[in-house]
Amino acid sequence: MSLFWRIFLLNAAVLITATLLLLGPVTVSTPVLLGEALVVLAGLVAMLLANGLLLRIGLAPLARLNRAMTTADLLRPGARPTVTGTGEMAQLTAAFNAMLDRLESERAASSARVLSAQEDERKRLAQELHDEVGQTLTAVLLQLKHAADRAPEPVQQELRQVQETTRAGLEEIRRIARRLRPGILEELGLASALRALTDEFGTRALAVRHHIAPGLPRLDAESELVVYRVAQEGLTNTARHSGADHVGLELRHGPGESVELLVRDNGKGIGPAAEGAGIRGMRERALLIGATLTLAPAPGGGTELGLRVRPAGPGAAACGAAGSGAAGSGAAGSEPESSSPDRPSSDKEKPW
Image (cartoon, rainbow, N blue to C red; front, side, top):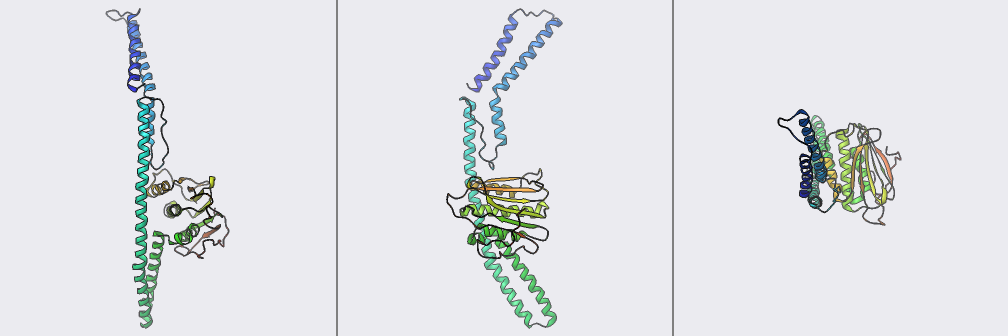
């Protein structure tokens, strides 16, 4: 039954009942007596209550659809209101579900194009920093060394200081280029890239430990890049906003032959604040590969970021050997200790 006829019949039933009561033994005098006024008033209240109740029942499907529209989130796809019946409300619910399917598909396609353009721009910037700025600063260092070797002692000390400042700037540019384009991910694989990433974030104020489980299924290139970027964003948020002094990164086996990334810190937690651009970016990256991203308070305080990824296919090779370790003071911006992707870590501490 359509919504129009449902509401019409409900109101008609109330009005017919009221009319039958007026045509019955109920009489109203002129002037109206107090008892008769009370009876009419009670009948009016009963009629309004019955009408309100029947309208609430009749409009309940519309209220459910309104709640579904209000809570719909394209970054958390899959939730759909149930289509019940065959009337106008069922058609409206089905049209809303089809619209959500189309919007999620279009958002996924546009996000893929945007993120692909971002990665291309990151690669271009990293290449220019390495080839242009890096080479220029290297030439400046050589010229400063040549000048310092021939300069008198007082000037030589000043040139040495300028040389060290230039060398520090060159190392910073190299660090920025590595973050823009994780070349180690392309060359040595995900396990080595995550080890190098934890080494880069380790400082005197923040201890970073990692654990890479053995025999993980190999992910495709796009999935590995998403895992790396989510780990990078998680460690960046921890270093900048959490106030933590310890963070652990773990790559392990998940349920159903999946691969799970966990980044857990002991900071102040996520709190009630709305999700920022960084978290929304991680969710969009996860949607591109059909992964599940979770962000919740960690046991014992802090924040736990999780990413569950399905492997490229059954029987895939392992993506890296087991390894665990810790990054301490002076590790920021350092290179991995070994070029082998299967390098075992020398420190066998647990990740947390």
